[in-house]
Amino acid sequence: MPADFNASDHGGCQMTRDFNGGEPDCILRLSGITKSFGSTEVIKSLDLKIDRGAFITLLGPSGSGKTTLLRMIGGFTAPDSGQIIINGKQYENLPPEKRPTSMMFQSYALFPNLTVFENVAFGLRVRKFPRREIDAKVHEMLELVDITNLKGRYPKQLSGGQRQRVALARSLVIEPDILLLDEPFSALDESLRSTMQLEMRDIQKRTGVTTIAVTHDQDEAMILSDHIALMGNGRIVQYGIPTSLYDFPVDLYAAGFMKVENILNGRIDRVSGTGAVFTMAASSLSIPSSEDDAPGRSVAIGIRSEEIRIEGCSQPETASLGENQLIGRVAEFYLKGENVLLRVQTEIGFLETRTKRKHYNEFRDHPVLVTIPSESVIRLK
Image 1: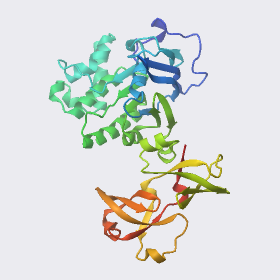
Image 2: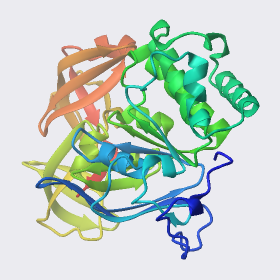
Image 3: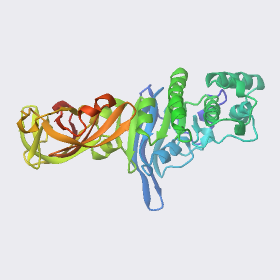
Image 4: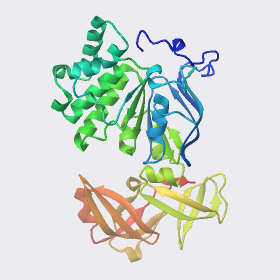
């Protein structure tokens, strides 16, 4: 945080209570945040707690409320109600310049008439840092993001990745308590995007700055995040570490957004021990049981394509099928690098799976044996 930033000097900041509830690791707490634009409720009584030093991603489609939430944390949009508490102090009524946050905008918002050095130095000059300190801090940031050799250039002379580095350095140089990133990689091509995602994560770890990013890209969120807040319809649908959202999406919305390829609807036929029998039409699968399972209850399950195993089956008419095994035939295939995505037609409908490209000819135009491991089935609400 800049040396001259003192929250107690910024009128309206309430300091009479410890809003973090005695939790020293909690840097940001959102409590009962709501926001409407006209008759459209964009954020619906949202609560969120973020620990110091974490990288959090707000993930969701357009219209889910993620960008509005980010802008409210940064002070660019005011909530209709609720509290925004940073380091135990209340900020929802203060403008951006009086918050210990820094926003890197989707467009980067660089000043075209300023050099790289001058763009990075801008926030420090506004805060009236001494010139010697400005020079030292700017050079430190330029070195951190590896653009020292570009300090005399103007934004129009830079590539997309270089402009992003300048914007990041400008956001970090004021030493914010929380760095806010609005779709930081959307303007980059795919190959550069992957490189910059890794670099962004590395810089965040080295600086230790608490970071909140907005994205609609599930893969990006998985790479960057300590925790992901999956948003939908103005609410946080699921919050957790990336692997928990990937392996255990809580409902159909989460499963769809986290790219669970196979969704099946059916009913519980019977429950025994730790398992249940899931029935669709005339076929059944063994699946993990849930505490509220009961015969006849309608349920949905998900199965990731990489969990479904296939092998050749030369005599399907006489094949002896084990638990959760089906006979199928490859109906369509799509090449994706060294992998082949397969749509296999079975008696329970189409299932998507994948195999290595070198194995594809073993299955093309031949019957296949499909195995769905019971433990890989995801129970959905």
